[in-house]
Every structure is written in structure tokens, then in C-alpha cells.
Amino acid sequence: MKKTFLNLAVTGLLLWSLPSCGNNPNASDDSVDTAEKMNDQMTDNKTSGVSEDDASFAVMAADAGMTEVELGKVALSRSANDEVKKYAQMMVDDHTAANNKLLSIAAAKMITLPSSVSDEHKKHIDEMSKMSGKEFDKAYIDMMVNDHNKVVDAFRNENERTNDAELKSFTAETLPVLTKHQEQAKALQEKMK
Image (cartoon, rainbow, N blue to C red; front, side, top):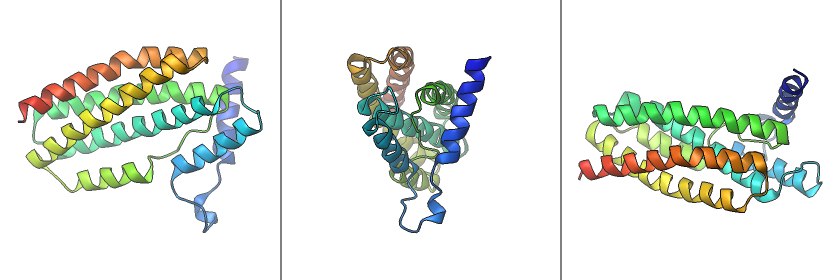
């Protein structure tokens, strides 16, 4: 009970302490950049027991996971293909679950995660939102193959590199799910040729 309260308190403190981008005209509105800067300060000051590489991985994983959820939601409304819609629902479900696990780990380790997707990913989501039907399906699945190729590699590298037991467990648990997403995206891509 104390640990749960402590996790909630730390999460609340971290969210409260995030600078409001709207109040600073010089601040970037990219919450990924903001999270990276806050984590750099914490690792530089040794106020977190987490390495800079682990914190950067967590930010990247959160950004990628949120992007998959958002793109999955777009796919559910823009796709013309039932298999693509089924894949998109899997993305929403699986990445929401992984995002929640990562959020819990980050709160316990005082890692600041982004509150929204990076500006780069927002741009992709906006572009995808303007497409529909077969054009959307092809672009979405191509993006899923590319994204999962990168993310699977990043999770493998983190799993091999990290000394943090919780992040090692998270990556080991999440890798089979990501590999399944990667394989299914490649199979859908082949069907669309």
C-alpha cells in the first residue's frame, strides 16, 4: 500500500513539475524534448538511479508506443481493410498495455516520460489522417513494418545493454509482442503488393 501511494505521489509530482510549454514562448512544444531535458538533468545530478541511456530508451519507447496507439486509432477509422483494422486494434490494445507498464516503471525510477508524441510523429499521424482506403492501408502497413523494425532493434539493444532489472524484464516481456507485430505487418505488406 505504501509503495502504491509512493508511486502515485511520485507520478503526480513528476506531472506537476513538467514545465508548461504554453507559458514559455522559447520552450519547445515537443514533450519528448522536454522529457529528455528533464531526464538529462536528473542523471547529471545523480538524483535518479537510472543511467542516461536507460532514461533515453524509456522516452523513445514511450514516444513509439503512444504513436502506435494513435496511428492504430486512425487506422480503425480510415482503413478499408478488415485485416488492417484487426491489426490496428491489436496495436491499440498491446501498446496501451506496454505504455502503462512503462509508465509504472518510469514513475518508480523518477524517469520523466513524454506526455504526447514527438513533433515528428505528430506530423506522420496528421499526414495519415488525411488518407483513406487502400492508399491509407498501404502507407500504414509500410510505416508499421519500418517502425517495428526500428523498435524491435531498440528493445533488443536495451535488453542486452541495460543493468536495470526492471527495464530488462520489461524489454524481455515486450520483445515477443513487438516481434509478433513486426511479422504480422510484414505479412500484410506482402498481401498488399
